[in-house]
Length: 170
Image (tube, rainbow, N blue to C red):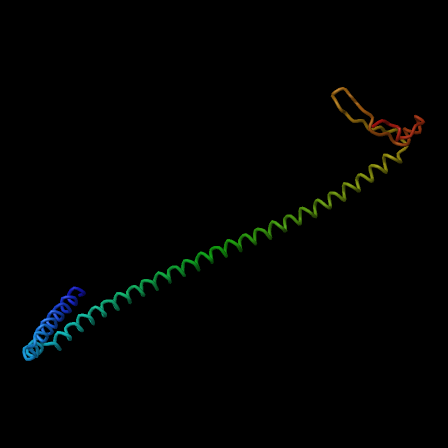
């Protein structure tokens, strides 16, 4: 279409160049006859038709490009929304798992605190029994297969030996 437009413009330019050359040569009557014979209105209408055809084609192609761009944009938007939803689901799942782990951790912490309180109560009871029992009690640490070291003695044993429990080498 562009080639046809260029040919029509070149033909019109050639006709105008002939008219101008004839007029410059002083033959105004001949220039007038060439202008009438060149069908200038028809030539301009042909140029306009070619230009309009090119414009229609360009507008059609532009419309196609716009439609393609809109489809691509819609696909990109749909993909982005889908990815965002998947990320949101994963994040929600992570929060749920984190909350569950946090509850288990709270339960385990409560169990540790309860166990620590029980251990302290048991240590206090053991210390009270060890301190107040009338029997002679001695605590030995086994450091090597054949080596025993006195770690503690109760007050009853200390009184029997006439020493203080603090004097026992630990």
